[in-house]
Image (cartoon, rainbow, N blue to C red; front, side, top):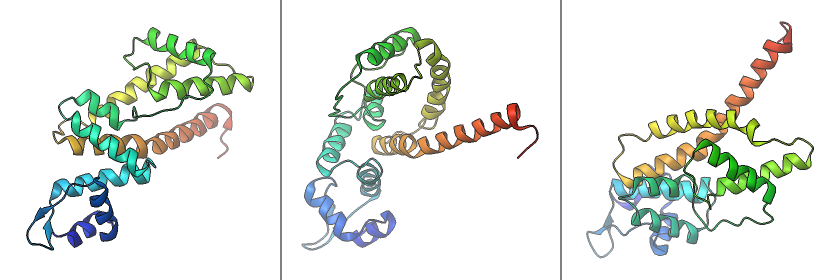
Length: 208
């Protein structure tokens, strides 16, 4: 396909596509003449991934280039590939990390028997959240988190089931990224709706 067709299918302007080409985010097309190149489905998929990284994740062009390079480097390692796509990408600054919260998180991971990298951003995010709750007078200990963690395990199974049968590394990374980033608000909305339903069941007394 020509660059105009690539633009139409992807929703990315020709000017932006040319910028991605210049910056090395998008590989060059197959030259058909001195002024025309041909693109294929691989370019379309990579372009969608670039949009997800820069638009949805809000990464800079330079960081996006690093992530794409890392994805290409680990195409034969599905676990590493998913780790990169699902958020374990750096650098991640853990400024003013709560040591008490981090100890709670470390203990929780050990109790659950989870295989989670020590530098995973989610560890820091959870530790900071626990610190904030403690500062507001609502401390949550490890025991209170275990039932939530078990629910998260079931969610993770459903997440990874969505990726079964995908062999193309770029498509796998794109799907993992979009499921993670775009599905999280939906999961939060479902939780809010379930809370409202449970409140109505316990305290509603038949009121809407």
